[in-house]
Each structure stands twice: as structure tokens, then as C-alpha cells.
Amino acid sequence: MSSANADYADARAVFTPPWRSLAGQLVLWFVGASFLLIMAVSTTLYFGVEAQTNWLDDQLLEKRFDTMRSIVSSNAEGQSWIGHEVSEDMEGPRRVFVRLVSADGRAHDETPNMSSLIGIDDFPSAHGLAPNIMRRGSALAADGRHYRVLSARAAAAGPLAPFVTVQIAMDTTLDEVVRRRYRYSLLWIIVASLGLCAVIGHFVVSRAIGPLTRITAATSSVTTMTLDQRLDLTGLPRELHELGAQFNTMLDRLQTAYAGLRHYADDVAHELRTPLNKMLLGAEVALLGANSTEAYRDALEQNMDQCEKLAQLVQRLLFIARADNKQTALVVEPINLHDKLESVRAYFEESAVDLGIDLRVAAPHDVTFEADRGLVQRAIANLVANALSHSSRGGEVVLSGEAVEGDVRIVVTDKGCGIGPEHVAHVFNRFYRADPDRTAGGDRDGMGLGLAITKGIVALHGGTISLQSAPGKGTCVVIVLPRESSTVSARS
Ligand SMILES: Nc1ncnc2c1ncn2[C@@H]1O[C@H](COP(=O)(O)OP(=O)(O)OP(=O)(O)O)[C@@H](O)[C@H]1O
Ligand SMILES: [Mg+2]
Figure: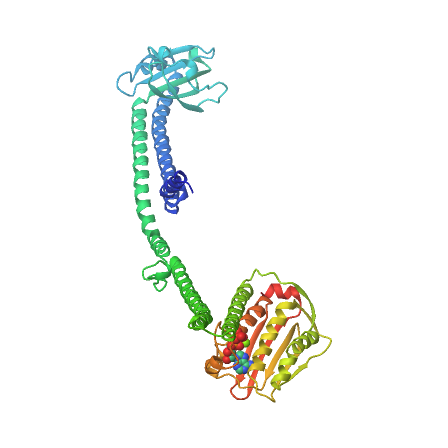
């Protein structure tokens, strides 16, 4: 990565938009939900207050309408109060304007100056309404003041008969001022509450995800040198306790796997060192002093033996790596069980005769299974090689096989020296040799890889392998493989 790109990547790593971080998202949700709640409460309160003030104003207007109604329906003497009535309440903040509109739609009487402020059409129309049915509303007058207005028809006597429309307007500018202040107050309360919510949300969320940060820090500090350290689970919330426990279990597995890997690397180094040292020593001895051609030839031959051993070791290690890899492609084909065992027997026949060991096959001819021919041959051959090399002259090795439900069972039995119970659990480990004393100087110079390879092959085929042995009595190794290739891939 170029340095410019690296800088850009660093900058991106440092700055994370809030909606991309868990804490940011939680705070945003918290603030958003609080906003909706505060808005709902504030709006309800505001409209509640507005409805309440309107209701109070309407009570006053209705009272005034009742007075006007009784005046217009009275006789001429009573109607003489009209002029007085429409001019009342002209002072003060809550001025009241009254207008009587005759049937022809013209103002019969009205409060002085009323027309210049609120026209007839500024009132809700009472046209066609039944008498005493009131229509209410709000209006903005020409002087910029707010009015609560009411219009209704009333039965009238005298010149106004039969009906007159009464229009009453009350100055409610003070109410509007109060409402405006209330709106501003609510706005400030909303803004302050949201700020407070954001602070509280941030505090709460930071506390809640604090343990997550702890786990993240612990994860990022894991190196091969710190595989023995574990996450402290005390104080972790219930939801994260499980995560922490799983993290520690994963570290357990990693530690075990890493220890195994180191052990394996040590073993490989050890196995490589022995033949290399032998070659070095042989070459040094050959170079010391004047030797005969024969002596040089011997030295070269010994070196070749060691080279062969090294090549064999490398080849087996590669084979193990292949058998260990679950992605290894198997060339699966139908195999006749008897033929397979017979071909292994034939391969070892000469050695068995030399060793004076009876090598036999006992399997039905009609059993077939699907597997990788070469790998299966190798797996069984490893077992037979072990059986032969651990049997004495006059002993016997039997290669038996049978079909058991959907599997084939291949058993290699010998009556050789057997394996001590303390070794049985380890013989499938790489480089494990149960009889190091005898192999060290003897003719059986095993590498301890045969059974590990066989186990890997069996696992690749989705099968199982087990070994039973009794010291002095012999050993029996059982391989169980699925008969059909579909089962092979499913199980492996
Ligand atoms: N049939 C057997 N009888 C007695 N001991 C056995 C038998 N098979 C395996 N073992 C013991 O198990 C060990 C591991 O066997 P494995 O085949 O993995 O290695 P090896 O035979 O020593 O070497 P390699 O197979 O790599 O040449 C052997 O060293 C041997 O001690
Ligand atoms: Mg072996």
C-alpha cells in the first residue's frame, strides 16, 4: 500500500461516523426516541392549552350573544339598548366588537370603527343556520391584533324581524402573546432536553459497551507470547459473559494448537538433524587422511542412505500436510474390498516370506466401497508394515474386511510384541514411537509418522480408526470407512 493510501486508511480508521459505531447508533436512537416523545407531549400540551383558552373566550362570546339575542327579540324599548350594548367593552385589552347584520347582508348596528378592523366577511358565515346555532373561529384584524369571533342568527322583533345575524369579536391578542411565549418556552425545553438526552445517552451507552471495549482490547493484545492469558470475566454483563467465556475457550484451543505446532516443528527439526549430522560426520571422517577408494565409496553410500531417509521424511511430511487438508481433492472410485487387501498382501508378500511371517487375507469377494484408491492403499500398507515389523518369525498377520451396514470394516491383526497401554493413546501422534529403544539401533528405523498418515487419510474419507493392543499378545487396528462417496463428503 502506498503511503498516501496508508494515511487515508489511517484517517478512516480514526474517524468513524456516529451511525457506523454501535455507541453512536444507540445514542442517535435514544435521542430520536426522546425527541419524538418530547414532541408528542409538548404538542399535546400546547394544543390543550390553546383549546382551553379558546373555550374560555367562547364562553364570554356566548354570554354576549345571549344578551344581544334577548335585546333584539325584545320590544322597541328593549332594542333601544342596542347602541349601548354594541359600544360596551371598548376599553382594555379584551375589547369586544358587536355587529348586527340585517337580512339584506348589511350592518344594521355595530361597534364604532368595527368595519375598519373586521369586516362582515371576516366572520364565519351564519347563512342558512338555524337560530342560536353559533359558529366560532379566529381572525386577524387589520390592526394586526388577534380576535376570537362568533356569528349566529337570532330571532328579532321590530325592524330587524324576523332574523338578524349577530357577529361578536373579542380581542384575544393577550392570549396569543401568552401562547407565543409558551411556544418559545417549549422550543427551548425541547432543545435543552435533547442536549440532556444526548449527554445521558452517551454516558449510559459508554457504560454499557465498556466491557465490549475491554474484550476488544484483550483480543487485539493476543500474540503467540500471550496465549496463556485469559479475559477476566468478573463484572461482565450477562450478554457479554458468554462471549467472554467463548473467547477464553478459543484461546484454550489456540494455545493447545500452537503448542502442538511448536512440538511438531521441534520434532521435524530433530528428525532432520539426525541424518544431516550423520552425513556431516561421514563426510568429515572420509576427508580426514588418505583413504582408499573403497572407504570413499562406503562414505558416499552411507550419505546416500541418509539422503534417501531425508527425502522420505520430506515426502511423508508433505503427505501428512495433504491428508490434514480438508480441501484435498479425493479421486473417489469403486474399489473391491478383497482385491484391495489382496493387492496390499501381494506388495508385502516377499518381505513377509523373508521375515517368516504368514500374511493372509480374509474378506468376502463381493464387497465394494468408494474411496481414493491410492490413499486407501497407503493407509492399509502403513498398518501392514507396522504389523510385519513388530511380529517375530513364525508369526501371522491377517488382513480382514467385511461390510457392516453402510460401512466397510478393515482390520489388520498381528500376534507381535504389542504396545504398552501407556503408549496406545499416543501412537497416532506425529513422530510418536512406542518402542524407541528397539528402533534406535535396530533394523526398524521408523519415523513415527505411519499411523498419523493413516489416521489423516481415514479422516479425509469421513471414517474412523481405532487400535487395541496387548503387550506380548499382538495388535489389532480397525478402520471403518463409509461405503458410498456421498457419505464420504458429508462425514468429512
Ligand atoms: N502393530 C504394531 N505392533 C506393535 N507396535 C506398533 C504397531 N503399530 C504401531 N506400533 C507402535 O506405534 C508407533 C507408531 O507407529 P507409526 O507407524 O506411526 O510409526 P513407525 O512405524 O515407528 O514409523 P513409520 O511408520 O513412520 O515408518 C511405532 O513406533 C510402534 O512403536
Ligand atoms: Mg509405521
